[in-house]
Length: 275
Image 1 (cartoon, one colour):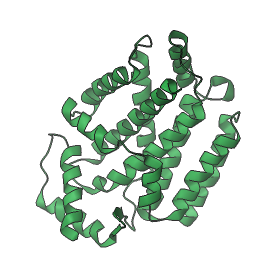
Image 2 (image 1 turned 45 degrees about the vertical axis):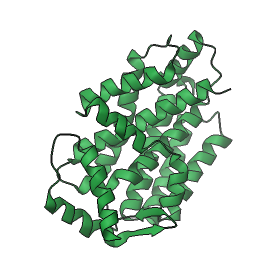
Image 3 (image 1 turned 180 degrees about the horizontal axis):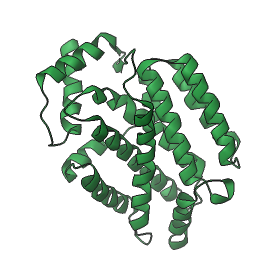
């Protein structure tokens, strides 16, 4: 069992580190000692956690910040007249990823495939702390029941949930909860219309796409909600890699932000193209 789990860890680590470094035996020992003792295979679902935190507050904020920065960079060059939204989205995110992360196109395409799944359901299946799901469901419920909410009201709800996370979760589960909340706060600010207190960039981008094509109206709250779920899925698959020296925490944080950002773009494309 330990060898199987360790093999999964190292396989993902080799990929995410791209071609910059080699995986060293002392790092493998570190991953094994930190995580395997807290790993279980429950009905085919791999569950693992750390009783100590793996991310700092600054790194969590960076993941959320990178999410917005990557999306804004892609929106600024996106061809809104394109007939193939998904192809244009992938092309622009690959260009940004190659330039900012340092991976090759092939590596980034492989990485995209690793998180092409239902992020929320993956969180339900793999989280080891139900209180994290309470946090996720609470903000999702708030957005669904308050479609005309202001950004300040969202910040108040998120602040309360951060207090809840501080008092009820620990270790890597706390990191997951706080990364979800930080990403949600940034994402809501990006996609929320300026009239509601948001940045307005995301809403302007959506309206530009709709002006050039016969796309349906998009619920910005659902886009933001998908961003938070993507942060959950990506982080649950990769948070443990921040302990691995060869990858580098900075590169790992940036890569997570990129992964969540492209997941956000894909969700938007899916909403626009749906009947």
